[in-house]
Each structure stands twice: as C-alpha cells, then as structure tokens.
Image (cartoon, rainbow over all chains, first blue to last red; front, side, top):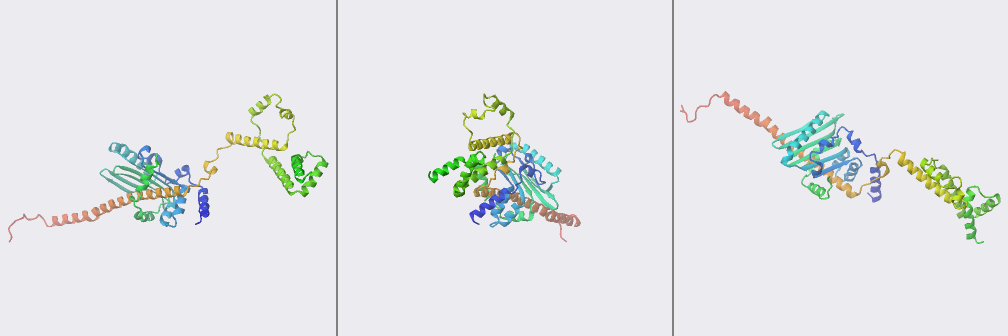
Length: 187
Length: 192
C-alpha cells in the first residue's frame, strides 16, 4: 500500500464516528470503571484503554499479517485492562472490590463462564449475551500477588479467541508491560 | 503615462467603482481600460467578489456594552470622518475592518452563545504508525491476559472433570466392590 493510500485510509478511519466513552458505557458489554479498578489507580502497572477508531486502525494494519487477530479486534468496541501487584495487606480490601464487581455483573445479566477459587487464587470469567451472541467478556483474576481485570466490549467470538490464545504468549508480551511501566503510561 | 502608471491609477479607483461612487465619465474611462487589461479586470472581479462576500455575511448586533463604550467616546458617534482625521474612508480598509469586526462578533457569539462543538468534530487526529503499533501491542497483551486466565481455568476445569468423572467414580466402584466382597480375611490367616 502506498504512503498516500495509507494516509488516506488513516484519515477515513479516523473520520468514522468513533465510540466515545459515553457511548461505550451504554453498551451491554461495558463493565464500570469503579469495579474494573481492582487495584488503586496509582498502583496499576498496566492500564489499557482502546476503543473506536484506534481498534479499527489496529484491525486494518494487522489484517494482512494476522487476519484472525484483526477479525477479533474489528468486532470489538473497546478493550480495557487494569492490572497491578497487590500486597498481602491489601488482599482483604481487594477481595471486597472483586466480589462487589461480581455482584454487579450478576445483577446486570452477566453469566459466569469460569469460576476458580483455590487457596489464595480467584479467577472469574463472565460473559454477557445479547441476541444470541457474546457482546462482552470480563475477566477478574487474583493470583500470584497480582490483580487483573480485563473488559472486552463488543462481539467476542469464543472460538476465535481460544484459537488465538494458542498463539498469544503472555511472556513474549511482557515487554509491552515493562515498556508501558517505563514510559509512565499508567496513571 | 506609461501602461504601468495607468494600471496603478485604475486600480486606485476600483474600490470606488465597485462602490458606485464614480462619475459616468470616469467609469467609462476605466471600463475602456479594463476591456484591454486582463490584470486590472481580474482585480475588479476580485473586488466585486469581496464586496459580495461582505454583503453575504450575517448581520450581528454589537454587544450592548461595546455600543455604550463607543457612544461614550467624544465625537465617536455620528462623526466617522472626524474620528479618522477628516479623511475620506476608503472602501478596502473599511471592508477589512468590517470583516475583522464580523469575525470578532462571530467569535464572541461562539464563545458566549453557541453550544460547545464536540472536540472530535473540531480536530481530526490521526495517530502515527508508532502509536498504532503500540496500541496493537496493547491489544495483544490484553487478549493474552484473557487467554492466560482461560488456559488456567481450562486446566482447573480439566482437573475437576478428571476428579469428578474419572477418579471419583473409580474410587466409588472400588469401594463398592470391596464392600460386596465382605470383610477381608485377616492377613496371615490359615489356608485350607
């Protein structure tokens, strides 16, 4: 693709009406920020907020090399992640927040797909359905001294996600986390 | 008079011509020149267009306090020529001043009256390729986090299923089998 054509595509994608924060909050797959922030905002080591035009650009730019990833991202309206380390002293308060989040999810029609409670570890995966399709996924995890909350807003294809999961190496992507921390991209 | 000097003299009078301030004889002389000189004709066309654009601008009421301040200046109201030192006002500077005034008025109206315009529609921000690459890495990290939890959960579920469907039934079956066989004879008992 020529530079001019690429620039044109960028402009067109950016000009498309992007889902704003308010618009995102109205979607059924949205998980409120007060529950997503398991760790205190200042302590998060990873904070990711991707939505609207940026997701479409990611999809457009990865379509040739990774069509499945591009397809999954294209169907999403938002990707939000909060993750951070927690000390033993913080665990009780954090568990309270986690359980409050679970209560909100259940009261808003989300279904628990996975529930794991073992020793000090708790892992939950909730999904939200609408019109026979998954329109949201929320992961709440407390394990190995780390709390993680992920909220995928939009259509999620579980089969595609499971297939992609095989190729996504969390350890290889740790560099991104370190880079984010180093550049102070977190609050 | 050279051609350049004639053009300069004609262009000096174009504003007055557009404003309809020339005598019939002077207008006829200028028209003759404009028929021969394309550059001056273009200048006249431009002056006409500016005049039209100025007339097309919306009529705005000056803010009341601005009117009050102007009226408060001695000789300011009703005596425009005196305010400019008695010089006749040339149309172009007046037009420019009017344009600035209208622009200031529109600006004032936008700030004080107009509803706020959403930022997204004001500025079209196109991210750089580097920003898109960074966002792509973030999206992969997010999905990897979901995948990690999913894999862990799958392992847990698999272990649960193994216990529930395989280990537990086998143990139960063995327990039943032992129970049906009755009490086990004490080890080292007599053999018949």
